[in-house]
Image (cartoon, rainbow, N blue to C red; front, side):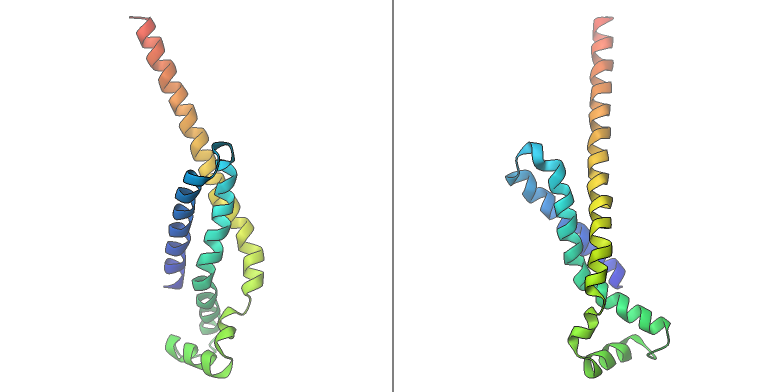
Length: 131
């Protein structure tokens, strides 16, 4: 559940960030803004991801008999901050990865669209000149 929810948060924040940047960032900086949007998106989704990963790991290790028991035990014995054990390490590992993943995806997508536009324009001009 946490993976799906964190993914939804990541992509929702990323798309909202891109839309905001399209309105306020100068055109020449748009490709770079995608990388920043990806970093912000991961930080936002990590609030869901990290507690979910902590619970998953402890459940797999047999530390708790079930999900609700795990949540209750962590909250009671370790406090709410314990749900974010490993948060810093997760950010150090996953923020750069997400920046590359989403930033390069959008960059390559725009390069491919540019090539398609040029190809279509060349095809259209070649067919109109041969007529």
